[in-house]
Length: 199
Image (cartoon, rainbow, N blue to C red; front, side, top):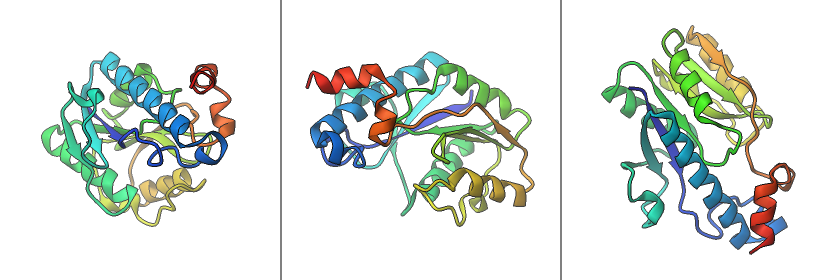
């Protein structure tokens, strides 16, 4: 079975959704992140795929009680994703998937589509409207896939695709989804507006 690694941070004020803090404050930004993390965990469970958490740091939270978790390793996002994918592939040779925890558009359908795509592609990506991606899956991994990528920019997807082309990787692109990073993103989700209005 293909594993899904969820990258997660402690849902603590000031540590998460920092781009939202100037607009809604640190406490509400943390509530938004926690809601998204709970949603992401549920989506992964619904998929039936093996779930693993990759934490930015150790924290004690009821969200983590049922799930196997590991530490993210590396100085930047690309290195951390490479290490997580490599670790999962070392245990499962048919593929591995990494997702973030701030996308309410992602569904169990996307995870299953990605898992199927890895049968005949080296890379599968779920693009985001901001120029990045909300999911990456690999059946083969090379550190070059993450070289010279300007993380947190609108060039992430484009640069990752260019790296995949250099490696002669076959790439499957799924539909484009929305990450939640800005107030404009947040305003697309009535449930999040209701959450922060009640707090």
